[in-house]
Each structure stands twice: as C-alpha cells, then as structure tokens.
Image 1 (cartoon, rainbow, N blue to C red):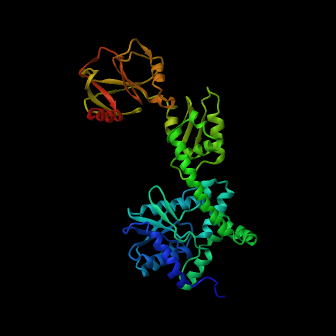
Image 2 (image 1 turned 90 degrees about the vertical axis):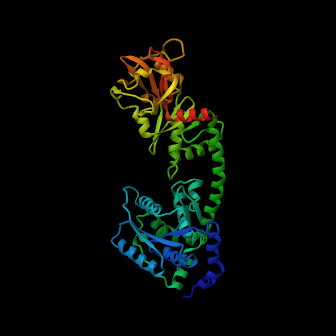
Image 3 (image 1 turned 60 degrees about the vertical axis):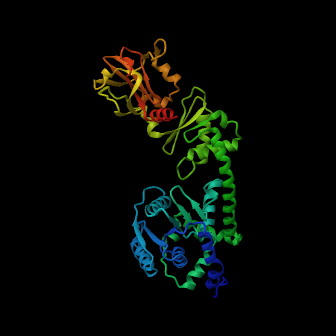
Length: 459
C-alpha cells in the first residue's frame, strides 16, 4: 500500500534538512557529532542523514551491552555500514551492573558515550515522538512530577556534555516510511518485543489499546512534555530563588524554609535531596524527611538515610551529610601517636589539612622536631585558651564554636609531657595557654585559613 506520508525527497528538501541545519546554527562551526547507533531503524536513519548533512563532522559509536548472543554481530553490522559512509566508528563493550536491567543498561551506555565525547562533540541520539510519548506515560504511571513529565528535550545540556535529539518531533511512521524509501538496512532487537521490560510492555500491550480510544494520543503526550518543560523551567527559577534564600547544597535554614508555602517547601526539599544524583527522591522519602526529621521533637536526634547521605536537624538547620562522614563518629577513637613538626610542614589530620607557619605569637621554636603527642578527646578535658581568662571545659568551647556534632570526633589534642599545647578542630587550631607560648613562635593553620591570610596580607 502506498504511504500517505510525503515522499522523503520532498521532506528532505523542504523541511527536514532545513530543520537539522537550523538546529545546528546553535553550535559552533568546530562542533562535531558523536552518533549513538544501535543498528536499529531509527539510529541507522539518523546515521545516514547526518553523514550527508554534516560530512566530515560525524563519528558513530555502538555500545555492546553483551546481553544477547547477536550483540557483537550487530556491532560489526554498524561498523560496516559506517565505513560505507566514510564515518569513523567506535565499538565499545560495557558491563551491566545488577538491579533494574533497563536503568543499568542506560547508565552503562551513557558512561560509554562520555568516554568518547571530545571538547567540541555533541552526542546525537535517535529518540522520536513515540519514544517521548512512551516516556511521559511510563513516568506518569511511576508517580513522576513536573520534572519527570518533562521527559526528553530536543537539545539538552547535561553536566559534562550536550545531547541533541533531532528526531524528537518525528513520528515513528515517518521514520519507517523514510527508511523504506531509502532502503536502509537495520537490525531488529527482539527485546523490543519482550513485555517483561516496561517500555516493550507499554509499546506492545498498552499503546495499541489506548490508541484505539485516543488516536492522537502520541501527539498529545508529546505536547504534554513540552508544556511540562515550560512549567519546569518556571519551577527551576523559583527553586533557585528559594534555595538562595534558604541555604545551600549542604544545609537549609528551617526558619526560612517554613516561611514558604507547603508546596514550595516540598519542591525545595525534593530538589535539595537530589543534589548531584540523576533522579529526585520518591515522594514518600520527602514526606519522611518532613515528618521524622524536620518535625521531630526538639531534643530528638533524628536522622534519615537516603542515597548515600544522612539528613539531620541541628539548631534550626537541616544538614545533608555524606554517609561515610556521618558514620565515622561511631568508630572507636584511634590511639595516641607521636609526631615531629617543622616549619612549612603539611600534616593531614581528621579535622583537615594543616600547615606549620611562623607567627608573631605561637608555640616555642624549641618544640620543632621534638616528639609531640596527638590524641583524641577522652572527655572531661579543660583548656585555657590563649588570650582568655581561666580554664574552660573543652566541651563548652566546642559548643560555643558551633562545631557540628558529627564533626566533633575529628577533634584532636596536641600535647607534650601531658601539657596541652592546643587543639586541632575543623575550625582551626586553638592555642592553649602554657609555658611553651612565646613571641616569634609557630602555629598549625588550616589550608583554608592560609588562603584567607594571603588575601588579607595582599589587601
């Protein structure tokens, strides 16, 4: 039966070629294109067209997931066709981690792409309108919000690269028609028909049923993604303002947070918990953060763990703490050890990196190159801070300095012959009053403090 779609040559001249060139005006003349090609119909058409529109600016990559017996043969097939078009091609094997197979395969694929993306490269993929509509539908069924329903963008700026999907406004029928007219070879991945996978289930079972009732469902869902992208763009502007007002990547001021509407609080917490991860936390996890941590009793030491971080409230602040750092405080303190120090020496301690520097007032030069002791707090210590009157409980000094509870295990004491010389803390070295203090001495300084000292000196 003759296709009702316009002939490819007509579209090529009047629409699609100009579409590619108009999109490419956003890129610099030095831009080259790395095309992800699986050997399927969509990516083979993309490879064919890009080779004619942008000759000498195209490379291809085939990622072998090693999940099927034919995967190596498909790579050879892509390689042979690319060579006919004079396109360099990369064949890259990947290992798939355990877990959700579709997600892990996608992650492995994008990791492989990034290995071969040069400075002026843009990754080009053959996602089309039905892919977009399926993504919206599947994410809706999983309970996604505005960001998830935004689905795929035609031009997407990721953290380390740009991604271009020039087929995103094309229907599956257009791609099939053009591929037939051009007589393009392609391979058929049988997993596309295996309904144990969500996308194949959606395409094989759900899609035909819904399309009988809603013939224009594909265009409608695709349009929804564009509307959600607009809404998400506005939401990101509001989120940026709220985040700048309420905190930063590591903490949120709860008094300021609670000045926002409940919906803005929920969106801010969701985006803040996401951090550098690929996806936001489940809705239920944000609710748990609000109920179990933010709204916990004042004296409760509540903490919520999610995706490698702990979320903890302390003095009207909500903190996001790396799991290893949070759990380190539960490790038994290390034994005391001896150390010899000298000017310009750099030492790495639990509380940070310190450098020994000459100062107007500090510890005696006679202590340099001598055996000093570094040990953890035992509890009950008192310190006579240099320049202050009387001895203080070290615990009180730590509280006054507002050193966060999960960092207090990093505090260590510098001593000689049971005389406290000072204390290493995440906020610097605290000099203790002793007979070893003198003019023209030395002190350990945190690396960050040294940078500030240089700025003050230069100003």
